[in-house]
Image (cartoon, rainbow, N blue to C red; front, side, top):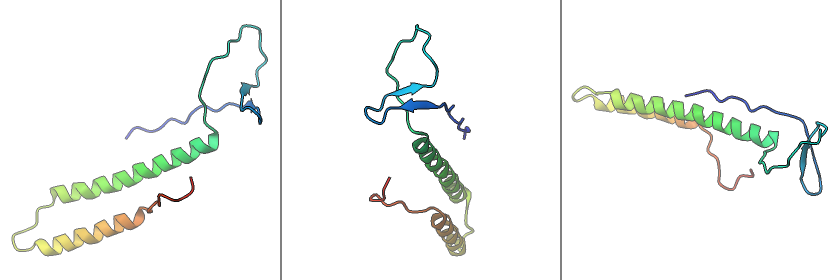
Length: 105
């Protein structure tokens, strides 16, 4: 998985009334306002942390699936292997927190 580069941050002023955002740089007379979209750093950090957790969970589930895909039980001895795989799957699932749909964002 490619690493995620952290976004560059800069200080700006935001109007508490209309939400307009302006950088702390004085205008030199050639500026043009253009529409841009921003997110608050706290929101970005929250989403980045969730993405990081999801990547870790995906890696654990991928490893579990890989184990299932390459395991071939011996004739007549499938049940102990199956039970061990079940126990490992439970451990992986317990390490992944269950997020409720009604949890506050």
